[in-house]
Structure formats: C-alpha cells, structure tokens
Image (cartoon, rainbow, N blue to C red; front, side):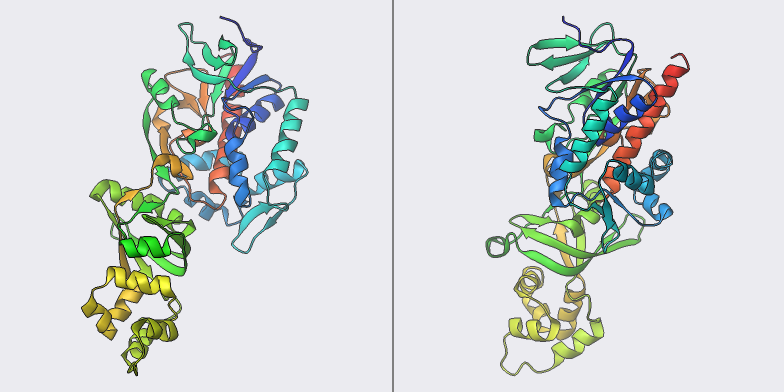
Length: 415
C-alpha cells in the first residue's frame, strides 16, 4: 500500500472546509507540517455554495447573546469562541485582504458578498506557510496499525501522521462532501456519536391541492411565527418564509427549526402559530372586520381592511372553517394566531446544516477523542447546532482553531 507525503513528522487534517482549513492554519502557525486531505476535487465546496447567498460570515451582536444562540451547547461552543470570537474572526478576514461590513440586521458580510475571494486568499496563505493539500482523497477509516486510510484515483493510500484532526462536516449537502459516513467509522471505534438530524431546515405541511398548485414558491412576507416549547414557554420570530408544494421553507422557519424539529420528534408533529397581520392589533382587526361588507367579497375585505395578500387569504381558507371565516371575532383571532401543523422535517440532505454528532462526553480533553488519543474533531461533525446568521460559520472557524491548538499542545507535551 503506497504511503502519502505525510509522515510522523506531520499532522493530517481530514476535511477542507472552514473548520479543517482553520485547524491547518493554526497548526502551521505553531510550526508543524500539515497535510490536508479532502474527498472533493477542490476545497471548500460547501463554503463556496453558502457564499452564493451573500456569504454571511458572522454576526455583530453582543458576545453573551451571541454565545446563547448555540442553545444547550453554548458552554461548549463558548470555549472555542474564547479563541476566535466574532470580532476576532472579522479581523482575520481583513488580514486576508477582504473587507467586511455590518448589514442592517447585524449580520457581517464581505464587501463583495462572495466566498470565492476569501477562499482564494486563504488557500494562498496556507500554501505559503507550507500546508500541503491532497484532493480526491476520501477517508475510509484506519488500518490495523491505526493509520488513516484513503481511497484515491490511484488506489488505496495510508499516511502515518503524528496527530489527526477530523473536520468532516455534518450530514447535509452530501454532494458537496458532507455525507455523515464518518459516524459509523467512529462509532465502531467506541466514539459516542448522537444521530445526525436536520437543522436550519424546512418542514412538511399537508396543503390542499389548490394551495400547493397555486402558491408553491410564493413568499409569505412579514409574519410573526410562534412555537410553544416543551417547558411551556414560547419562542417568537418575525420575518419571511416560502410556501413550497408540500410545506414551508425559508429564514423564518429556519430560525425556529430546532424547537420545531424537537417537537416533531417528541410528538409526531409540531404546531406553528402565524400572525398574518403583525402590525395590526387584535382589537383593530375585530373592529374593522365587524363593519358591514357592503357587497364586497371576503378576499376584498381582507385585502383592504387587514392588508392581507392572496396567499395569506388562502392560508386562512386552508386552516379556518366556514363558520370561523364568517365570524369577525374568530376570524380576527385566526389572523393573529393561525395554526399550521408541521408533520415532518425535510430530509437531512436538504437541510442547511445538521445537529448531532460527536458528543462532548467523547472528548478526553479539549477536542481530542477519549477513544482515539491523538485524534481531534472540529466543525459541524461535533454535537452542536446554530441558527443561520453567521453563527454556524463562526463556530466552525472557532472549533478549527481550538482543535488545531489542542493537537499542537498534545504534541508539544510529548503525546
């Protein structure tokens, strides 16, 4: 079996997404030779595709609020962010020659709104630091001597690194390399891994044929969505989403996808309450809808008096019975809290990101696996999740920095 250019004097980083590249940069800065292996023909495939929508790198909000976005994993993710927080990440981007700006929502973007210039500059700096990149190297596990094994265009290949950083991504967008196949490999080695689940995902709704045909792809603009949490509290967000042929997608739904998914898993379905007229009070709606119609159709009344477009009116017909639609009080209540039942998440591969993965319990210290000394993990393959808004990328970068430092510290301590 041929050997790769990597040897016991180098560190292997497996996965060339943001977490892997950051781990490689950190290790190189610590004076180590680094070899990056990636299954795809070129690095950063998912990173580049994420940049098509504007490349939201991070967020400018208060640090405590920022860390809180990671829900139950906040304490763990917070330890990574101590090494590379949102402000430090922004300075790092600037050091690559890419300027950024803060949008009206607080999100941070590159001036050019693209990922490609940043990735090109980053890869150039990695090459100049001596990092070696090996593409079309698909990692399949370890051999009997605990050496990483790869499938390559020229056959199987092993390497014998001094340490290994795994940054293999989650389970979404398999065509870009994140297929979650590593879960079985690690579990067979005794690593604690929770099942991968869709995060920042769409949901299935049983629309009528009329609504599915007439409004598939239509934006549902300016609504407030509320989901009841298991502890009896409620989570509310304002924004927009999109009606699909069989459900709901879009930023508003993604922002609530974690609790919605958890309810679907626990109860078999989840209820989303939609306020279709967020700028009108219930009392205002009751009063205006109680006035005589004077021959106007209900659609006309809802458009003129409640500001509802055809999609919102169709949703009312979809979810409210004829008696409710004819009663101004109950109609107003339906407009302010329209129940939509979500029966399932969309498939994992369609999700923007994934939850689940290698647990904190699986770590001996830092990000090194207890079951596999000298093997470290970073990025989305770890058991955490984040909403869209730059939080996902920031934690991927930060975990890469943390894993790189942990590996370097382990090696300097004499393994």
